[in-house]
Length: 115
Image 1 (spheres, rainbow, N blue to C red):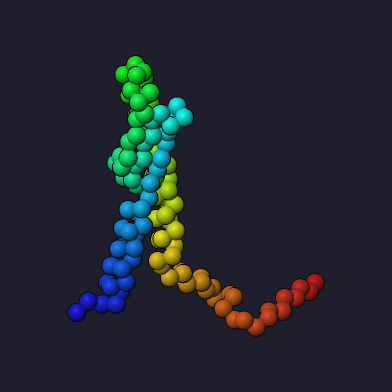
Image 2 (image 1 turned 120 degrees about the vertical axis):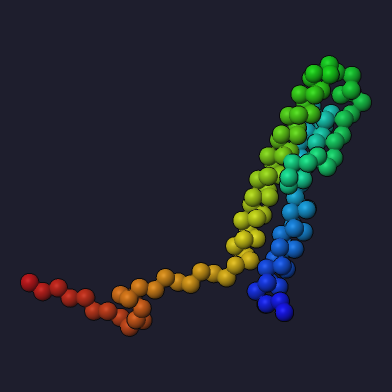
């Protein structure tokens, strides 16, 4: 028999997986001559190279592709971190308020000082 907590954890894990699979980062160089899109893990999901970009020096094209990949990956990683933080906050119950002996009572406390 699976506990309710285990079922909730499984559902939360599935929610995170679905949300992470939608995260993308995108970068372009030279007004769209090179466009790179990555997923949350940095894997290239789309690479577009215009015909004009294919005519430049191969080292320059390689630098444009790797630069776009780095920027797209950083963007996706930042989006994934923000998403995970938000899901972690939403998926947990709020921590209980810290109770101290001094302030547990809701009644007003009279504070006096005499010399």
